[in-house]
Figure 1 (tube, helix red, strand yellow):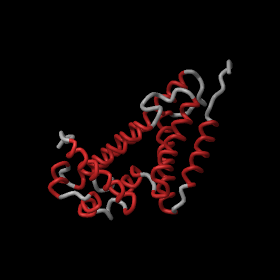
Figure 2 (tube, one colour):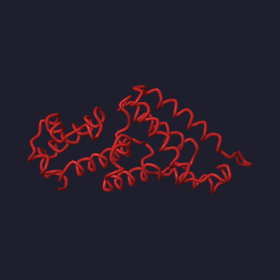
Figure 3 (cartoon, one colour):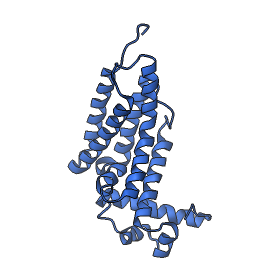
Figure 4 (cartoon, one colour):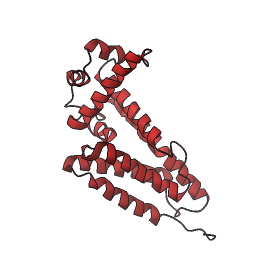
Length: 205
C-alpha cells in the first residue's frame, strides 16, 4: 500500500487524508469514523482500503504526512538551530504554523497524542518518532551552542528540547479546549524568555 501510481489515485488518497485531518481537528480521533471520512472525502470504501489497511493505518499515515508538511514549511528544515537567533526562529515558526493553519482547533499531533497513544502502541511509536524528528534540530543546535560556551552550565539540551516541544503542544491542547488561539502566542513569548535566560554570554561577546 504505497503511493498511488496514477494521478487519479494520488488525488483520491490525498482527499481521504485531507478529510481525515479536518475531521480529527473538528471532532477528535475517537469522534471520527471511517464512514465520516469517506463522506467528507467523497470516496468509496474500496478506495480507502486500497490505500489504507484500517483506521489505525490511516491515522499513522496522517501523522507522517503532517510531520512532512511541518518540515517542508519550516525554513530551518532539519538543520541544527546552532545560534540563538535560529533557535528562537524555530520556536516561533512552529507556533505560527499551528496558529495560522489550525487556530483554536489545536495541533493535529497534540490531539492524536492525547487521544490514542495510551491504548495504541503502533500510533504511539509513530508519534514518538515524529516528536523526536521535531526536536532534533533544537537538541543538535543546543549541543553546538554548549560546545562554544554559549549555554548556561548545567543545561541539558535533550531535556530542554523536549520541554520546548511539550510546552508548545500543551498550549495547543489548551487553546483547543478554551477556543483561544492567543494561548499559543503567550506560550511562545514565555518560552522565548526562558531561552534568553539560558543564554551564556561569552567573553568575546
